[in-house]
Image 1 (spheres, rainbow, N blue to C red):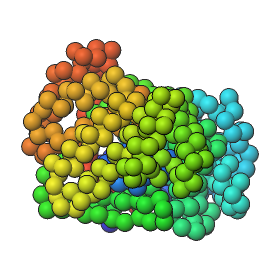
Image 2: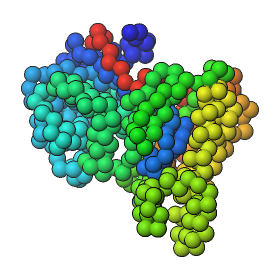
Image 3: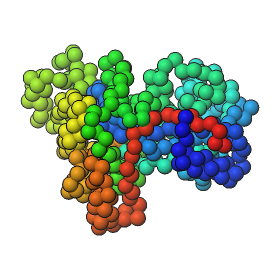
Length: 414
């Protein structure tokens, strides 16, 4: 297995962080978990749509070493002021308590809580030091961390998960049940199953995962993420929570008349869609707008998949752009800084499509770009974004991302 220069640099950084925290990680393994980029359907997971995305090369690196005790000891280089988080297995604060609301420690606490609740026999603790370069908001930093911790705890305790989708369920439970974030499963699936150079296609009807290579011509496609420099609160404090509630509520209402509709994605034929819009456009206008986005995005999804397989990256980008308009105008989940980024890069020749990413409100936007336009995109953002959003002139960043494996374990670096 090849080890990148960046992995070696991060191993050295983790060793320095361990010294800072007074921890010994000599001989430790490193588990590296990726970020993700959803090509479609953003916000489709909790609405029951099929999903498609890739793992991207912004990571969390976690160096871990069994410590021969029943204690977990963890130090984050991203949150050094929190010091070493230390607790006995099975002895963590109550879910969603004020004690954990504003600390990154809610993730290891949540992993311990969920695994114990689900009957996993945990007895072996470990020392761990971690550091990540995933931008906040839009690339699934929280899902990456939860997956990394779950896989590490299970490995140290000699437990093989029943299957990979069970790991997805556990990671979602950490956020839903312990932290109180109403996330779906898109992020966890796209990270855990990600393969280098491949797209991941997930079908919720049978919980199947398939890999789809990008067709000939796709080698000219680049994924660009534009971090707006804004800080988004957790999903539990954002518009995401409102949108999910609206969609769940509308699906439950529709189910009273249409027994085959349990999620908005079940509205697939045009006649049913038009009947619903006609019936509820006056009484539930916002709910109808949410359905409009899901219905249209789901129809575009299959066009996008065919284009991906064929290497028709202009079509893939066009669908991505249409989804962005729907997320902005119908789903109303974007934000002003996100749209500033989209407006800027849309003017650059070679940008095939752009839209907000992730939970919404703040965070990052994304673009699908021709390889020879990447430098122009960076220049356009550097020129226009600081003038458009001066409060974030020294906080934004542009990331050009590769398509990578979601999870890797690296040995011999510590």
